[in-house]
Image (cartoon, rainbow, N blue to C red; front, side, top):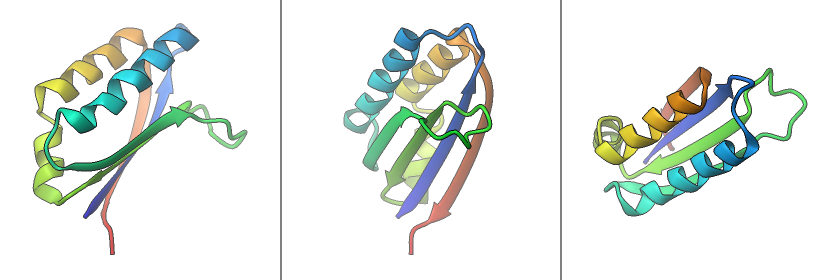
Length: 98
């Protein structure tokens, strides 16, 4: 299994409604992209977030599933929406689950 962690920093122009829409759309990917075992996303409430407002974890069956996730059209739609609402920065960490 592979764990995919994403931390998202948005521009101040992003509204709370847009953040909730992003989360709603992202969670639907589990039913659209093969190889996703679990997907969780939410607004960060920590005061240690360094400006990263949204966290995402996706657990994949294997590395091939992760590789297929990036270019998948449903994932690309989410990424396009993210850029439209004001993506400032992103941190991505991928690792094999032991």
